[in-house]
Image (tube, rainbow, N blue to C red; front, side, top):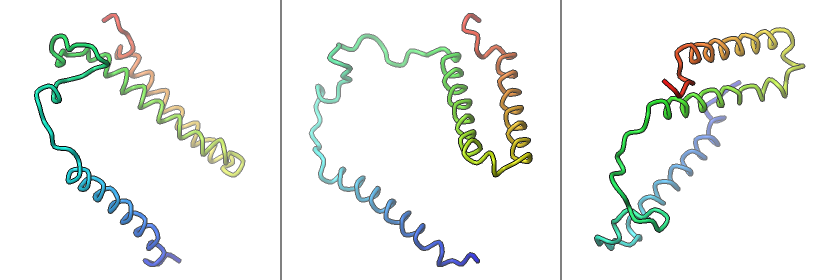
Length: 121
């Protein structure tokens, strides 16, 4: 039976984590150096002098490819619990995974049909 006291360790852990994060953020702003100068505030990239504007627009295809990679890569992570417990899930679990793969493939087919994976267009 679930009681509110069962959640106490979880709430305590979250409070400690949040307290650590807030304490770290506040202390770094209080104790950190506050020296500013034109040279210090300049952009520095691997010792190479800055050339041009950093706000050059990128192709949307680049971002679409990155987002699609993350999307489909994260979906593959959901196969791990099934692979570990596939005997326990039985036929019902198998059909659920087949449905999951079907949705995955439908999404991939949609993306392919829309031309999101073609760089030449």
